[in-house]
View 1 (cartoon, rainbow, N blue to C red):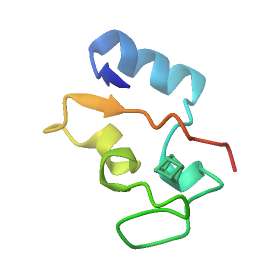
View 2 (view 1 turned 120 degrees about the horizontal axis):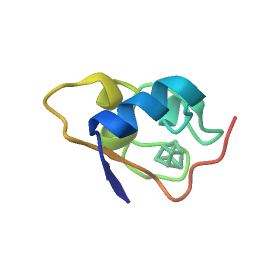
View 3 (view 1 turned 90 degrees about the horizontal axis):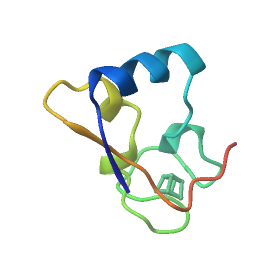
Length: 66
Ligand code: SF4
């Protein structure tokens, strides 16, 4: 699922301390190109939230808070 990183989203992201990335997921198993469920990391890493070249945050439906 993709969410555009518009101004409204950025404001709520900061206000509520939104948690969504692989680094905060129980299935994240460190560096590499995929997690323990074999899903690729690249689109779901925390860095994507702060990269100005990335217009969307791409959520993983298997995210499970660690
Ligand atoms: S299940 Fe999804 S959010 Fe969790 S580590 Fe794997 S790719 Fe990332």
